[in-house]
Length: 344
Image (cartoon, rainbow, N blue to C red; front, side, top):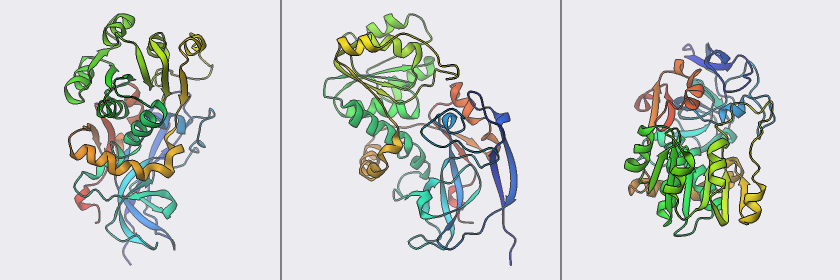
């Protein structure tokens, strides 16, 4: 009987008080598990890094149970089935699901989001433009934001994997897209790579003046990934009937104690605007509607994407903090195996 391969696992070592840092995690080694009846053994190829992971490890109330101390860090991953004891799954299948930051995962079908069918596209896209990020942009903008042709759509963290997709989907639907990003490199990416009609650097000076130049006719849809001063400035420019999609609060370092800031109620009242929180997992039953649409947009060149790939699981512990420092240009992934050799 052959010896089980080594399974490197990234465990949560301590509970972060804010943004998780590298020292909050540890890497351990154990034998790869054997799949039980009804399970498959997945060899992970790419691990996802999400801003939402900050909430997944926080002790503060969130939309999901926090990862426990000593547990494998929760994560979506793309992997290849290397052994199957589950009906409908076969050795060699490429799958995406909640497999965690580790080399191998023995999981049941409930942990598998889907089998990857887009053989003409890189498998890594199942974690980005065809994964949670693309889905978030698609449903957050179209279902919650409800853009109409001619609307001005403003998105914060516009060069990121979600924000860049929001801007492009807005353009596909006949809207004017305005991106807010941090630094000239990311602004150039919004304009040259993702085709925003306007974009500006929120760090570069007078935020109000920049918004006035970029949105001379006000704001109809605001896709908010940041909260904080950026959002305070946008609120003042909402048009009558505007829609605000609350997707993230990246600018707030800690919610304990709860930060205080300008009140938005008057803006919403006077402009008869609507503000709604959005969590992509609420749309799980509808994912299958979006995947072929997003894939066709990618194939047609209407939806472009960037990936920021770190090679090696040793980069995982510090990867979340790097997101919040703005290090990445595109969807952050950790490659831990060659996709073409993943079945070995």
